[in-house]
Image (cartoon, helix red, strand yellow):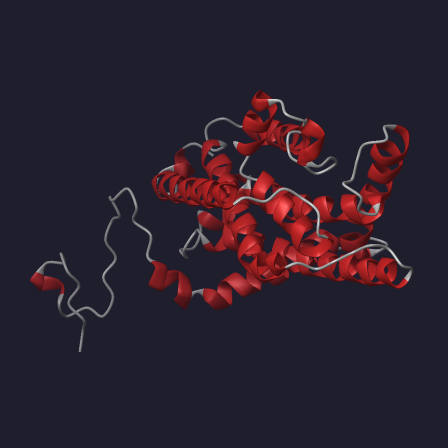
Length: 292
């Protein structure tokens, strides 16, 4: 027996599936996305295969990239520049910030070319287009878990050597913080991918923009180094990545500046960016084949 869909003319009742145009601003079928979850997981597997195909070290780069970056931060910012780490071991301080930031940056960079990179597939077969950026975000999440395990092993190693480390109750909030970081990166990445269908140079600028964003985030320095400057503190509080990074450090190192207001603002910014991204995505996917 065919199911009668709201808004579908009665003469179509004999059909089991009715395909109709989508015209709403927020026309995303979440139930359909869930039905295509196997396709999303297949895309996740494809992402790993394509990324590490014909490489010497393969998935080892998941660990080597943040490890090498942390060592460079430790030498340049901790050794040469002598930036404060609020009493935390400098290596763990930089690894904590770099672990969260790498996760966020990969979510943006991997989803920024969704339409351009998948235009040939999108033009041949129908499936929910949001499965591709979601699969990229899930791929970044898996990479983050691997890097977090590495961070945890270094944390245990420093603790065994007598370093002053302490876990705080903020540890219970880490799963929500990680989900927020993923959704923020997904939202920003979807916005960029939607705009790059008409403005290709945005794909080039996004990598540079993410690098600049890192230096206005407390990745290589704590908020305490800003002193009492109200303008600098306001600038940092307007950065939605400030609260997640500081919360991660507070949870695992016991140092950082975390406020409920900062977390609420970060979550609100994330939801707004994600909603805007989905709206743009749903509008662009209807006509992107004419511009890509």
